[in-house]
Length: 290
Length: 262
Image (cartoon, rainbow over all chains, first blue to last red; front, side, top):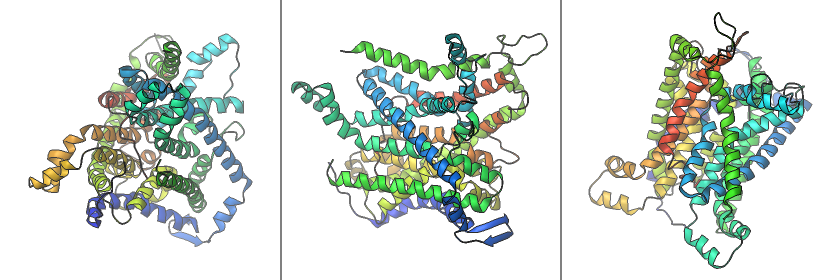
């Protein structure tokens, strides 16, 4: 399976443009953020060294802990809804044959909607006077108050996020499933393997790398949800959907650059830790030869 | 065969995905503010006519199209040699580079927005489509490299070897052999770069202070004390059209090219 590739550092010449571009738009700004995070910035000319004070203030603040808890909770809910659902859709599409393309096109649709419009679309949908779902809920006598009922805001946010990102989960899972040679399915059918056994022993090992990527991408993106969550209820009601990135957005808007930079570095640290663990787990799995 | 439950699943899925889009579509053909000679809720093409007659709105469509196209071209051009190097060779730091790509793909734009603004304003890249096209490489270049690497790794190595024996240089091998061989991969990479650039809001907002507003910001500006929901929805429908065209072009290849490694 694993072909060894020739070793050549001359290949770096081919990497050079990409590496330069990443340095300009990624590394340089990141170093700058780190530098800001150690200063109190009144204006770009008036800067005071404060060392790790911002970090201390953020990490010990109850507000940060509350937002972190909410963001982790949101990611957990999003992953536990979207990954099984996306996997189920991908498995079903895989058995549909040629019509699967239609399904993939369907789930890809929400991916091309600009992020700041998604909130508006869903608010339009649940509007009790003009929205299709809102009117249906009223007719059924179900009260849905996304504005002031925290549970309802959460339901709306998770539903909206699932609508938005299910396509990515389906596409990546489907891509993983496509790499399974048909002979394996035939062999399993000859052995009389059950549907569950086929999933457990043929499909799951094959899509494990793709699922890893799905988990990672969905985690980091949901963990840092900003535009869509802000569009729905701006963190409300009563801070119930006040996630990490909304905290950061507020600080940038009020020009607390030093503190905002420290906050950015804390978030970057969290994201980096998650990615690092992901890479380690992946490497361990590859080493086992799976 | 358990066809029926599967049909049920697809019907439910179709309803779920299409309902918000249908709502948007319906509202875009409706008059949503009280006007002379027109009732609220009446069918009308007026919203689309208004877009056509408002220079700020039509210009924003052009602005978005320009920086997205630039970004896609830049990403593919830079990612292609890098993906080739990663697919064909091992070299010092290759795994670290992939880790770096993953890290920057995962960095929330809000985190880097301030230094990027300062850096870009120093080089006159604010209010310019080139600035947005450059900064969107932060998350699109990793994606383009991953996808292209998967497609190149699937091409047998003999293609390279025969071409070099035939006397092709590396650039002419890329143009004559490699690019045609992985054309679907380039299409898929272009689709994902297009998509993430088109829908992105944070950088697109901070880098367009006075001019070059993208379509997303033009729609934001429509929200006022008395928002014309119909007009907003019509503009939303317009903003979806390029994406729909892209989905149609890559439909047969969209689920390939994600054997990501790290």
